[in-house]
Amino acid sequence: MRDGMFIEKPRTEPDSVIDLHDGYVVAPFGEAHNHNFDASSPEGAKAVIDKYVTDGVFYGQNPANVLRAKQGLSPFINKPNSIDVTFSNAALTGPGGHPIGLFLRNLSRGGMLPTDTNTTSGFIWIIQDRKDLEAKWKGIIASHPDFIKVILAYSDQYERRLADSTTFNWRGIDPRLLPEIVTRAHATGRRVMAHVETAADFRNALSAGVDEIGHIPGFRGNEQGQMPDLKPYTLTDSDAAEAARRGTFVITTLGGIVGIPDTALRKKADAFFADNLRMLKKHNVKVIVGSDSYRTTSLPEALYLSTLGVYNNAELLRLWSEATPRAIFPKRRIGRLLPGYEASFIVLEGDPISDFANVKNIALRVKQGNVLTR
Ligand SMILES: [Zn+2]
Image (tube, rainbow, N blue to C red; front, side, top):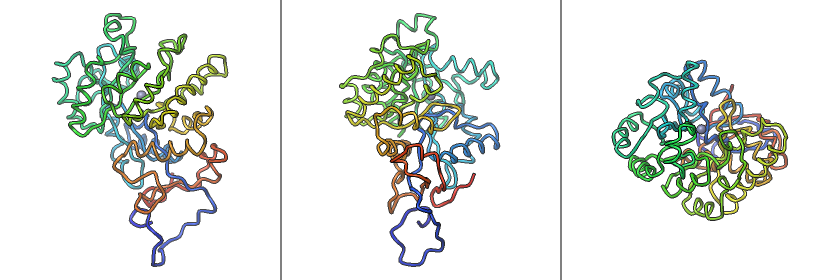
């Protein structure tokens, strides 16, 4: 490698040689959906970066953050010897929509401020209608988001849920606003990620032309964490074919279930998740790995996906180390160990194709030519 890039075999003697000790060299991993890319102090920033470097996850995407959390991390990231992360800043939702419940919880704990709605530095933009979107759009862009995050939740029932106070936090933005949001975002060179709960949300997101879908429908069940009726969450052949035709990325976020004991409900959820994932794979949808798990990196998500029996180890490795980083940074030459690509890789002690758990045994971490230490 030279100047942080892989090169063809050099004609001159290299100035240094690193022995990889018969290790298995793979491209670093990605995390397409996590809100833990945040920090309120330099120590906090160091802890976040250490956690990701440890797991070999060098590329991340934070789809909903307060601006100060990004500002706390920014001085330490997006450089050759650190992790690289993009941020949506505040998410766009409707009145009473997700994640206002999370916001109120954080507010009561002191983690957020009363001003964290409808300001250029807040956590949420509450958008009522077209006029409201028009009025707030300037402020949304003024926060310099890397991409736009918008919330759909049971969007086929938008009117009914808006009028029903018991659905507070289990609704999102008016889906009729989404095409205009996508048009506006694309006009500024930004991509759009949609949060979804149901297959109906998935359809509304696709037809509006979003670039990424933040979850696989049904990832967390209903308000009670259950799925008495699977139909609203089940992806069909035509859903998957349309996602493939449009080239929309779909982020997994299924591994949150790992904490749930091995009950009948857990087995039902595992089987259902596998069905939706299999449908996406059948149509070659661009599935990428993201956990939405605040305490961890995408490592437990990838390990969980490997238990579902949908993608084999080689396929899953490719999703996690090639497709995910390149989806987050589409303009960069990453995710390949080839001349002309960024010289970033990790060295595993064992073969991840024969045993996927070997992704945990990392002997060496190199980012853009820099050996990373923790
Ligand atoms: Zn999320």
